[in-house]
Amino acid sequence: MNIGIIGLGDMGSLCARKWAQKGYTVFGCDLPERFEMLQRTFAGTSVMILPNAKAVARKADFLLYSVETSHISDVVEATADSIKYGAIVGGQTSVKHPEIEAFEKYLADDVHIVTCHSLHGPAFSTEGQKLVVVPHRANKQVYESAMVVYQALESEIIEIDSYEQHDQIMADTQAVTHMGFESMGTAWKNAGFYPWDHGAYSTGIDNVKILTTLRIFSYKAHVYAGMAILNPYARKLVRQYARSESELFKMMICENETEFRNRIKAASEFVFHGEREFITLDHDVMLDFRMAEEAGEYMPNSHLSLLAMVDAWYQMKVNPYENLICQTPPFRLRLGIAEYLFKNPSLLEETIQTALYDKSIRADDLEFHSAVREWASIIEYGDMDGYIAHFNQVKDFFDGRLQEGARQSAKLIDKLTQ
Image (cartoon, rainbow, N blue to C red; front, side, top):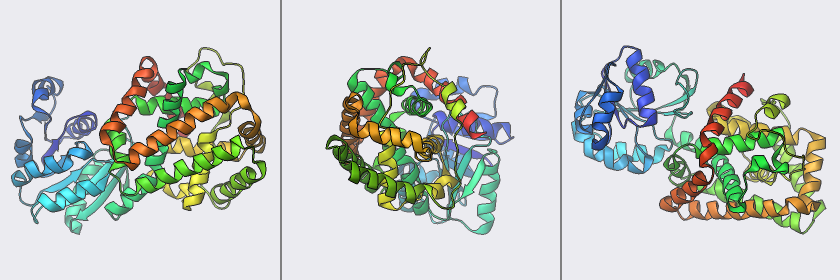
């Protein structure tokens, strides 16, 4: 089959190159102003750059839309009448509700729909990474044909029955995970310091926090904005995370130890007891990856961001281990460091004491509390422009270290997942 890709950004280009390497003829396009640049980029490959999306749609037996979630409806509407009879169509958006709505509204009945979502960023090859495939409108033969194309990416394929199930899992794993790390970055930006220069962020857990935060801000804002704002299941989880963080923070500043301990204990017993596929992060590996030249003087940390995450899972009765089927590296790392904290009694006790009684970390916790409120409000209001602007302000603050952080985090992920 001829493959068409509408949207040759980072992910679209990654898939195009892989399919071309596998012997497919690939037709692709992007915005008109990128036409000549893409021709140069793909010279010498079997990827043929066409001037517009309609031209790509006319050529494709298998057509992939790799565009921003916020633009998917407009692009599908503009190209639907050019799609070949009996073609298979999919999308690479991370939120499937807007995508499927556009497909159902604009595609002819004879066009089949087997969509996908790569659970990794463009910095990684498709090989060995997780790829979700969701059949929506396809018989068995069509689905098998689509799977042949997707299997050529050499990813670990996860088959999910419906786009609703996909979006629910993505809300559980991605929306709050990203918000947590974005809130940390915002707190450090507002406080005006780099966490690797601060003694309270010198442990293995903090190395993971810092590197994952830098990793997220090294990518494009619209990716995370779409996941948080356009996923209909995300806001409820974001709302609960903000509520959990706020209630725990109030207990901390009131030094309400009994209620605080009871809340942490109940959350711990719900999330970390029973049959679980524990991640068990390696302590020495976490310590090896740091952004500072030398480790700062050790200071205990309240780890409010992790306490709030575990409490939110408990309050929502979400078992995060059930979602490891669709894990992303940031989600696995966040669950991993939360697990590391809660399954280490002495570290958890130190964290509780610090949260309740150590005033030296209270200013940082206040900054984090404010940042969580800011992000929760932006997501609650569905403010896409505000989300992107807020994200880019933090991105600019960390600008000089983002690429190093992304490289370090890739090495860390590789080490910790072996």
